[in-house]
Length: 274
Length: 308
View 1 (tube, rainbow over the protein chains, first blue to last red):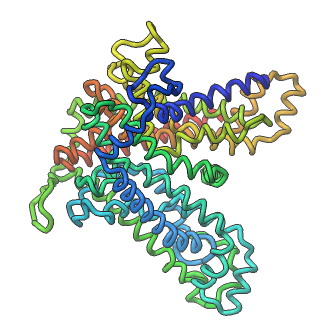
View 2 (view 1 turned 30 degrees about the vertical axis):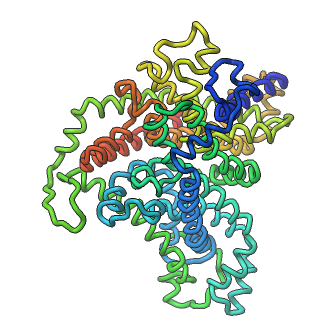
C-alpha cells in the first residue's frame, strides 16, 4: 500500500463510519423524509424541529433520559465503590483466593450476558419481584468487570514503597486505599467511569425485559418500542425516530469526543489482556 | 493461588495465620461484594439455567410452591425438533461466516493503514470508534432509513437495488444484519490490532525489505503472523458477540423477519422463554448456544494455533 492509497482507504473508511451519524442528524431535521441524494444535504425549505416535538410527545424524552441516567448512574456508583475495592485488593493485597477471584474476573468477560437473561429474568422478576424497578435494572450490571480490571492495572503500577511505608506507620488498608492509592489513580477512575457509562446507557435487552411501565423505561427501550409499534402511525416516522436516535446517541458520542484519549487507551489496555 | 513477591515486608501479621489467610486477609473483605455479585449474577443463574432446562419449569406467583418435575432431555428434544430454533442456529452460522472473516480482514487492514505516520490519525481513530460507543437502538434508526425500499442506498444503486429490498429480502436480511454488526463493532477490533501491531518488531520489517520483499509480501509474512495472538482474540470476541445477537434482528428486521430469515437464537430464546412463558425451553436454547459457542471457540483455537 503506497501512502496516497493508504490515506484514501482511510478516508473512505471514515466516510463509511461517519456518514450514518451525519445522516441521522439531517434526517431528524427534515419536514418530509427525503431519501434522494439531494436529501443528504440540508435544504432550507425542508428543515424543522417538529420531529423532536413529536418524539417527545410520544415517549417523554425528559423522563426517559432521567431513567437512563439513574440506571447508568447506579451502575457507575456500584462500579466505583465495589470495583475499586476489588481492583485494589487484587493488585495490592495478599489474601487467600486472590488468584481465583482474578481468574473469575477474566472469565466473566467472555461469558455472553444474553445467555443468562432467562434465569436472571426468572430470578429478578419472578422470584424477587423486582420488575419495573431501578434496582432490578441495575443489579445484573452493578459492577463492571472490565473496570475492575482497569483499576487493578493502575493500582499495580504504583510503587511498592508507598504501601510499605504507610503500613509501617500503622495505617489501615482502607485508609491506605482512600488516602494514598485513590488520589494517585484518578485517571483510572475517569477511565472506569467512561467505559462503564456506555454499557448501561446503550443497553437494550435487559431493561426492555424488566420494564413494562413506560415511565420507568430508559431511552433505549422507549425509543425501541416507538420504532416497533408507534412509528408507523406518525406523520414522519423516520424523522421522529431519528430525532430520538440523536438524543440517545448525543451524550455517549459527546463524552467520547471529549475524552477520546481515555476511551481509546482503556480499550488498548483491556485488549492486551488476552 | 498466586504467590508473588509483591507486598513482602508489608504484612504485619506474620506467622502461621498469615500463611493460611495471606499477608493481608482484609483483602478477602474488599473483594467480597464483587465475589457475591459474580456469584449472584453469573454463577447461580448459569447453574439455574441448566437446572430449568432439565425440569418442567413454568412461571408461578412468588411464594407459591409448585411441583416442577424432572423431565430429562425432554426440553432439549422439543428445542431440537423446533424448526424455528434450527433455523435460528443456521442463521447465526451464516451471520458468523460473514461477520467474523470480514471483521478480521477489515480491522487488520485499517489498523495497518492507521499504524503508519499519517495525517489526521486521531481523526481516523475517532471516526472508526464512534459507532462502537453509540447505542445500537439509535444507529438502527438511521440504518432503517438508509436501507428501506425507498432509502438512500437503493436510490444511489438505482436499477441495481435488490428487490425485495435488503431488510425484507429473505436472502439478504441476515447478511445485511451481519454487515451492520461488523460496521458497528469494527472500531473496537481496529484498536485491538493497533495495540498488537506495536508489538511486531521493526527489525523483521527491515529484514524483509533487505531481502527485497514487496510491501504485500512483508504484510503477509511479517504482519499477519506477528499479530496472530490478536487474531485469535478478535475471532473469539467476534464469535461471542455474534452469538449474543438480539437487538439488531429485533429492530432492524422487525423481529427476525422476513419469515424467520434473520431470527437469532437469543431472539427465539426470548420469544419462547419469556413471551410464551416457557423458561425451561428458553434455558435449553441458552445451554445449547453456550455449548455451540464453546465448541466453535475450541475449533477456532485449534485451527489458529496449528497455523502458527
